[in-house]
Length: 189
Image (cartoon, rainbow, N blue to C red; front, side, top):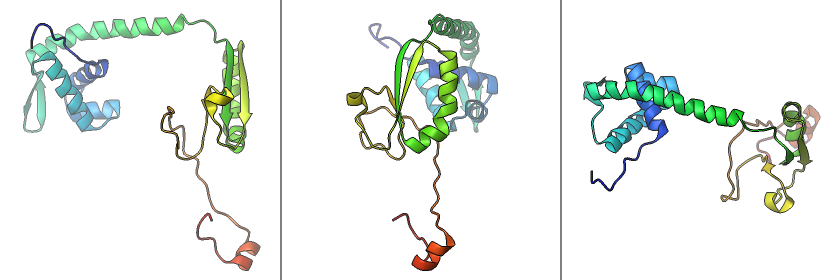
């Protein structure tokens, strides 16, 4: 590697490397961190590439750490622990949340699911003003001044950041009288 190039590795790769050392296998590491074996293998391979050296000897479906891997693991453990402590202390130094948090959510979802969560947040952060806008219409969150929007179904605007929160199962139901008059329900329409 030319001297002008810097090593590029990630914290995920370091953490994965240490878990593989502890678990003594890719399979065991995958179970411990709840990711697939190919993800673990890729992280290890990327870490080895970044370092420019093999960390494990591979043979017949097993891996064995090299001497340099064991030495590296000894040095990385305290460094990683120090990094984790530093970041956690930075979070604990954050003062109480203040200001306004405006949340948009569908009426039925908000009433059934958000109430207890919002109550916990409000108790934990009394200086935070929480504004709930229960509306089933799809609104432009930024234009309406919302900080967070909860929506059911697929996202149509791919420029928004989204995260799946939960499954919201639905069932098609009808009274026996309705079915007798209109026939059995076969689809939502």
